[in-house]
Length: 322
Image (tube, rainbow, N blue to C red; front, side):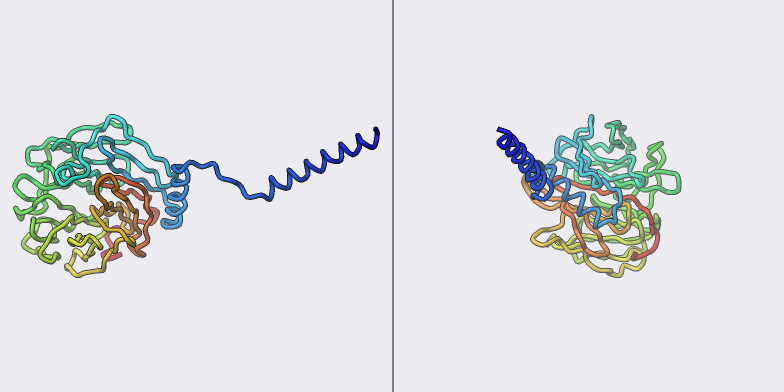
């Protein structure tokens, strides 16, 4: 009886040791949901791409405006903000085309032919000025001149205007060509604008459109401007973006699409070395964050009109071609 009890205790001890061994050395089976696994992949790849910078993307999944935190992988709906648009040629022109303020605290966007300034809490106000062209297809961006914030976009008479965000009755005209179609942006230095005339893309010094330079090849599509003196535009093939020096109009290179992908609606980040774009149709708009100096990319999810804010640890704004 004593022997049987001792053997029983020995077997229990042996089973405990074996269980501990399995717990320590056996492979761990993940219980992550697909969404959690996807978030972890985005966090890991973004950390490598950006050297662990904070960053966030604002984008649309109509009727919602969304924010993706690339540092944590968390997505959230911005409350109290409704957007329109989506798949189909007619709906694509209605999408909100949000644009971050340089500090990432607010953003500008379009809804029902009106332009609004909002924040992540869902607080918003309309920018009202009769000179503003806020029709479908137009995009308004954000420029900061010292401590003054300006909305940048097309005027009703085809110029590029700045509208004071604190007091929208105050405006400035920085391009007087009279031929801006929908798209226009100002470089982060404030020295140049890039404009879409409906047939070509031009870059020009602010307030001196007579010195403009044509940088497109008999077509125009979605020009954008960098925090430094660079600009870009998209050819019809959607396989690349052409990048130019705004000072002299010289080509600086191309940003190629990821393999088996395309580029549509590229937006330069507030940081000179990062951009974001979407591509796709129907309900499968795929978004990628990019590092321009290397061409690297991170798939970040599905959505419309992404705009990327990146923590600028060493901002080099104003250095042409950096």
